[in-house]
Length: 493
Picture 1 (cartoon, rainbow, N blue to C red):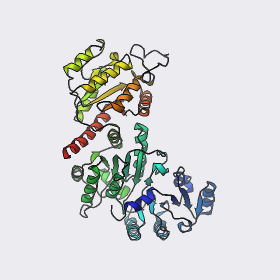
Picture 2 (cartoon, helix red, strand yellow):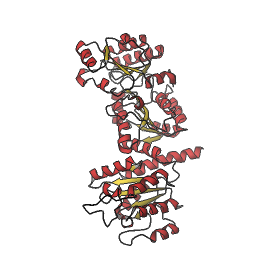
Picture 3 (cartoon, helix red, strand yellow):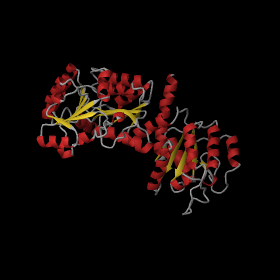
Picture 4 (cartoon, rainbow, N blue to C red):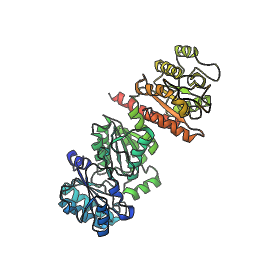
């Protein structure tokens, strides 16, 4: 990391004291509300008498200047017009704060005056030792301390993922989607906006060196100036992290119009498609093109063990889905091979001849009269030497929550009134194989016309730690990207 040590940045991420300069009444003091669950001491700095009274009525001590706060401040969020940005930083330097994050915009992404102001702030930061985050960012996310960058981000407990983002919106979106879709929490994150002093390379290195972080995700719009050596510095930083843990990067602005818009958003310089491909290849990072792909891939890397191969054993509940899932897997370099003769023979001993098939994919709708039967099918696929993973497609109409959480076979599931069954459920079987099966196991929940029911099914699977995707295409793409990472890493080893 340039300019600052890990210890200096840790002071902001582990802040005991936080101050917000210029929380706005018009947004109902949004930045103070974002620290509602903060476990340290929160202060406000505001000169407007009415705002000061309203802030103190919320139980937050307000001061006219950061210099008046009677204790050292570890982290400051500035939410003022840019005309006050330079003076705010000068006061923070005199107050010896740890780091300053500027939600304020209007810098290099706006005009020449803003670019000059940004450079002056950067110079002050480098010379003073007070870290500048951004400007034009939402700053630090530390769920353990209740430090949020966007309303509604999961706080309290932590998890194995770290995230680096130039976009404040994407920083919040990633954390909330990862938790909502897959039940996975984060260890820490940063929105760094224009990256005037600390850029993507610095932050990926910082977050990636955290021992709690098993997977690093990132959203970047630019990586600096190639002629100044920033591309090579970025590659080296990512390579160091990727040698130890996966790094998944979504690069925004990959089209001509998109590149223009990123310049307006964070002042980022364009990275051509050819340059970006070289960067990904040289660094060992996993490249994605959407937020969904970023979240899905991170979830695979967290929830599934090290991936060994592309050959899948597929269980479906309707024949057409077998073809759909197989084609989706194939589009991403994965295969659905024939089973061994031994597996076919064993499956044939109990598969119903009505509407089913004991080949791969297993058309198992009429061969799932009990959780024990499903367990047996998965175990056969896990033992099959031609397979590397097992995936099951749950058609929401055939496998709603009432059935998955109980033990109803095809002969009973459409009855309107069913009692709660006792003993092992289908969900128990799926959760057991997800937790300790011989091979990676995950679920696809196909909604068809039953989207609400499909969401309910995914929720109960998520609660039991089962990786469940909303479509075969997203599942196949995420598994394929993760497999490519593990294959390359095994080759390097």
